[in-house]
Structure formats: structure tokens, C-alpha cells
Length: 280
Length: 313
Image (cartoon, rainbow over all chains, first blue to last red):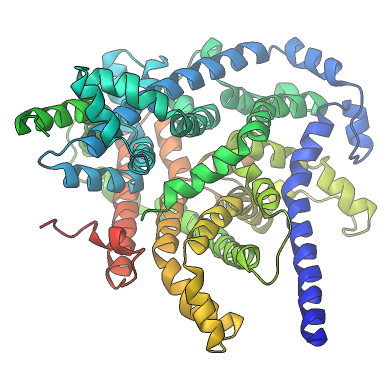
């Protein structure tokens, strides 16, 4: 028995070492980014450091001086992410509620179709989408990035999983007896109850929009509408060639808000990932 | 319950109508439009376009550029997926093992997942800065004598390919751990207890109980990772010059599509043909894997996946 215990604790030590190595690999690049955002270019060129320095404001002024409008990009990204979140959550919940609550012909086919849509690489139709939007005069317009989210298959899939786990039937029937209309039941009975699920879906929608580079890069052209990932792309340009501190600060500015959101909502996010995948 | 049947049906359609309309306008029509454009010589610069039949597709196969991009994309995806799923299975097995009692599982898992949430464009630019000639990687390597002198990483094919593979792995292994773990914890403990009574070893239980019951989840991870991987863009695009340098070694499907789109004349007809072929290749592989691997499933957890393509009686 003691031999068994010894082997077990040896295994445990080995596992913690592996976990620790993986943790370093995961965290060190992010930590270096944040630290370097506070160091001057000279300090960065002198060598590595894991401790922050005092040049944050200086780096920020260099960025602004080079014409990188970080506050503007921040506002654009925030506006786009908030609008995308509202559209995704509302319409995904509406669709999911329709599937879960009502019996109708073609319901099963529609449900299956949603799952297939999640697996289809829709991004590859971006060229046809771009040309179509330019015919409608919607290129360089955030509407082209927000409106497609009315039909967000991933959101509907998640919403359906979530609503199926709730017992709504009795409440819906009670509201009907009180004479509430079907849409009012959705708004006043279901939505307040589904806030935890809607919040989880909203966090994912927000992050997806915040991180989206490809679609915005293709559809948006004027500099004053650039989102943060698009500004990151301009940071790669020659103007910033030697301003390492400023470059790191620009990158840090795009990811720190996400890290803060994660610090508060990591439990929702982790359980949301698992819920989106498991289907009983 | 006292409600006329037609009314309920009608409301069901009403609730899903916005989705269907939105899908037709912003989902299906763009797919059709991309397909239609791929048979024309449309450019962004001219109003007139002619139907050219399969000429765009013939041109894609006339030289090695398109096939090179497809090969790169597959290579990068496969080499990131194998360690991703391997490490996820290993970590999940450790995290769920009741004898090992690993502490703070939730914290480990949450930290490993963090890179997945970061702006991919920023991650690419970050690693570009790390691996640039005067960057921290060269500083480290030279100072500790691991390299005799600073190296131009951004011009090395194996280093850049390896780096894209590493970044993709780095961003996705944490998510895979979460999903695999969720699958493992949904397996009834009684199965393991029964196996332990019968004297099964840990590896026997892993192969005979865990893996078969995990199959639907593994297929899900496999397919979603494949679909994402075939559309890989941000990381290889921003890691070097936006053309998949060095030597087009990290030029992926979407980078090639973008290059045709952003070429001086804006050959959107030609760009569409890339989109169409990759769309077909990816969808067929995804649905094929899903169908053939899912079909032989006989566990309970696999039921819904298995029934997906079966006609509902």
C-alpha cells in the first residue's frame, strides 16, 4: 500500500511539473507583452525583463504622435461589439425560443439545419458578400458587420441548448391564461429568466466581434472607422519600425480589456464553452 | 391545452422568420453570389464582366500557387491539431482522475484557455515583435549561448511554419481541454467503478470506456477545428508580410483569396473561385467525417449526432 502511495505522489509531482511548464508557455508571452508596454524602447533593446517599468505614458504619447488614434479605435470596437452582442443575443434567443416552445412542421429539419450551419465555413463567401454589399452601398458601413448576426447559427444552437435545460412550459401557460401575447411572453417571461444564458452568449458575441479582423478588414476602408484589430495591422507598418515600446502598448490596449472581462466572467465563459459542445 | 393547433404552428414560424430572412439575405445569397462570380472575370475596377465558364478554376490548377496554399493550410492545421488533441486528452484524464486529486483544476483550465480569447491579430503582431531580428527571442538565445549569433527568424521557412503551428496550438489547446473534460465528466462514474471491481487498469479503462464514449465529442472538436483551420487567416497574414512569406510557406487558402481580392485590379472573380473550392473541400470533409465516423456510434451520448442526417420518421 505504501508503495502504491509513493507511486501516486510521484505521478502527482510529475503532473504538476507538466502543468507548470504549460502555464509558463501560456502566460509568459502575454506577461511580456504587458510588461513591454510599460518599458521604453531603449530598455526593451537592452534586454528581457519580467518587471514593469515607468514609460507607459511616454509610449502612449509616441503612439498618438505617430497618428495612431487608439481612443477612436477603442470606441469603434466597443460600439461594434455592443451592437453585435445585442443583435446576436436578441435574435438567437428569439429563434431558439421558437424552436423550443412551439410544435411546427419542419421544426426538426430546421434544428438540424442550424447544427449543419455551425459547421459550414461561411467566411469563404466573403467575396460574394463584399460585392453584394458594395451594390447595396453598405461597404465601409458597420451595418454590413452587424446585420448578418440576425442569423447567427452558433448563437441559436447555444440558446436552444440553454432553453431546453429550463422548465418554461408552466410559466408560459400561466402567462397565456393571463392573456399575454406570445411575443410579450417571450419578452417579459422568458427573457428575464434566461438572463444567465443570455449573458454567457453575450460575452461570446462581444469577444467574437472584438477579435474579428478578417471581415472588418475586407469591408471597412476609411481610417476613422478602423477597429482595434485593424489598427494593429497598421502597427506593423514602417512608421513604427523602431518604436517597440509603443507597438507593445498598442497591442496590449487591444487585449487587456478582454483579459479584464475574462477575470470577471471566466466561470461563465468556461461553462459556456462546454455547454456549446455537449449535446445530450 | 385549449389552444388551437394552427395558432401554435403559426407562432413557431413567426419566431424563426427573422433568422430565415436574415439567413437568406446575408448567408445564402452571398454564397450564391460568390459561386456566380467565380464563373466570371469580374474585377473591382470595371463595370463589365463576362461569363468565362471554368477559366478561373483552370487557372488555379495551371500553376502550383493554389495547391501550395491548400497544402500549407492542411499541413499547419494537422500539425497543430495532433498535439492539441493529444494534450487535451492527457490533461483531461489527469484532471478528472479521482485518485490523483489534482488541485485547483478550474484555475489551471481557466489559465490555459486565456490565449483563445486574445485578439488573433494582436497575437500575430506580438509574435512578430518577439521573433524580429532585434526582438527578445534573439536577445535570449544569444545571451544564454543557445545560438552563436542573432538569426533572421522571419526569413526561415521551418521557423515560421513552426511558429504558426505553435501559435495555433497555443490559442486552442485550452479550449479543447475544456470540451474534452466536459465530455469525460458526463460519463457515469459507475462504469469506472464496475471496471475497477473487475480489476481493469487505468489505461484499459481509458481505451475501453473513456475513448468510445468520448467519440461524439472528439468528432465535434475534429470537425470544428478543421473548419476553422481551413479558414486560417489572421495569424499567418500578420506574422510576416501579408503574403505568407518566407517563400509562400505560410500562405494559406484565405491569404491567397485575399491577395487576389486585393490585387491591383481587384480580381474578385478569381478570388471567388478560391473561396468556392475551399468551401467545397471543407464542407465535404467536415460532413464526410461527421457522417462516416458518427454512423457506427452505438453509445447514448452519440445519439443526437448520429441522428442528424437520418430522416426523422
